[in-house]
Amino acid sequence: MNLYEIKQEFEKAIEECVDMETGEIINPTRLDELNMVLTDKRENVALYIKNLSAEEKAIDEEAKNLTNRKRVLNNKVEGLKKYLADNLEGHKFETAKVVVSFRKSEQLEINSIEHIPTEYLISQEPKIDKVALKKSIKQGAVINGVQIITKQNIQIK
Image (cartoon, rainbow, N blue to C red):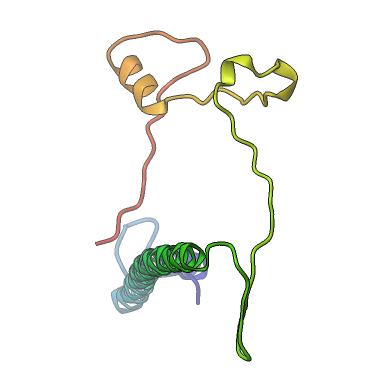
């Protein structure tokens, strides 16, 4: 049974177990059972969310560790390439297991952006500083098209 079905069953049981004229509870055991089922279901859903959140954090941490390891390996590769290139002084090196050679490439170097014609510039949409904007509104600033909305966020501990 999902939460919706349990709530429907609970409402049905209230109609059946409570005398509408006197308010007397005819079958309190049935109501207690359904309340227990509802409580257990809510607890299990909350625990499942908590478990998923912990797994998400573990994945984030592992991704951070892997990104760090990748950066370290990349730095090591680049350092060794520079070392080998400096050692070979532009000459080809070849053995049965490896061939090291050089090729020419072109790279654009921009010394000053001020002299670049506008046709080569890419315009970007402005970004809103939401933190500063929210702070200003909380301090009393009135800005058209912006308001602070209070929400209820679920918190599971």
